[in-house]
Image (cartoon, rainbow, N blue to C red; front, top):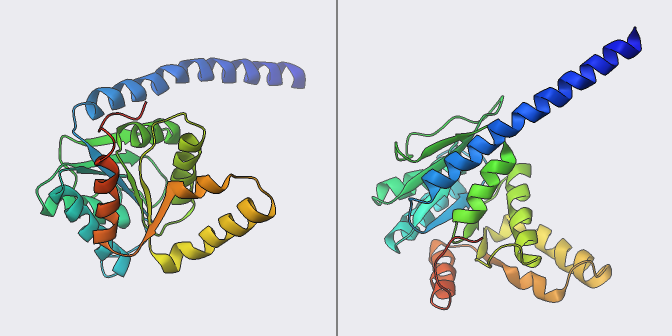
Length: 229
């Protein structure tokens, strides 16, 4: 009997997996169709837990405003904290404000600064991350947690392995990121040689909105704007 139950459960799981492919496909189709209509954008990442009185919330808002003033839209994960700050800055400057929302049991709710026709909902993190990578002309990465690190290192890996076109990756906040970068340089590069020294050139560290936007503008003075794959 136990074997029969297990076999039935396994068969049900396989059936559910098969049907899930249609849900996954629908998220990609929805994302591609809607994101392909927006112009060049820069994605802003960071913690959902930082409040409006936090200095990095304020800085993310300022960076988003400057991004819009320089001709780009802003994409965020659509939630509170740094994501809200990014959409708020884009909204205040009258630019494109995109939110790629994810269904989570905590923290995530869409913020009020997303353009009403540019709020997309995802169940799958991997489908959502594809939209960030494909339709962003740059990543601005503010202080954040595991999710922020996940998005950061996936982008670095895809560029490093030439799976996507190169674009600027900008870390904001020396006090937050310097320890991680020191570990990357000393441990990954110099001690264990698990990366190449030139891989470090994929990352820029800044502390001001002027520096962040300058890196983006300098990069696209040399390269054309287009989807990344």
